[in-house]
Each structure stands twice: as structure tokens, then as C-alpha cells.
Image 1: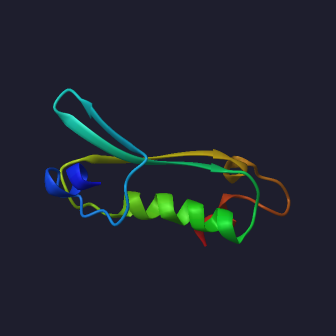
Image 2: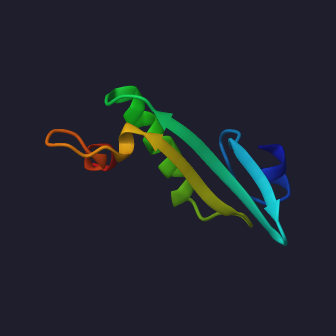
Length: 83
């Protein structure tokens, strides 16, 4: 987090799960494994999205999401997390 904020000026409020350099580009990212539907999982998804929504700094921002967030059935799907 210190490097991302001090050198890359990302203004993060918590440490990223990923900080990488690819050529001349820096990448900061969040990785989330969402194991079930519910309040805590929705918070994890929103946490990852919050990183993506900010445009501050000199780094490419990514979110790596896995788990039920991608399962779509008649009652639950990604729209529940986004809305």
C-alpha cells in the first residue's frame, strides 16, 4: 500500500492483493473468492469494485473474481451484487 500510494499516487485506503510491474506499467489489484450469496460476499464484491472505480494514480487497476459471483440461476446472479 505504501508503494502504491507514495510512488504511484493511487490513494488506496487498504493494501492491494496484487502489485505488479509489466514493462513500464504497474498493476494494482484485488482478488476475491466469493463462496456463497449473502451480505459478506456482497461486501467483498463491492470492495473489489471500489478499487476499479477509482482512477487515481499511475497504475492499471484489476479485480480477479471467482466463485458464485458468476453463477446465474433463476434466483441469484451477478445483478444482486451490483445493485
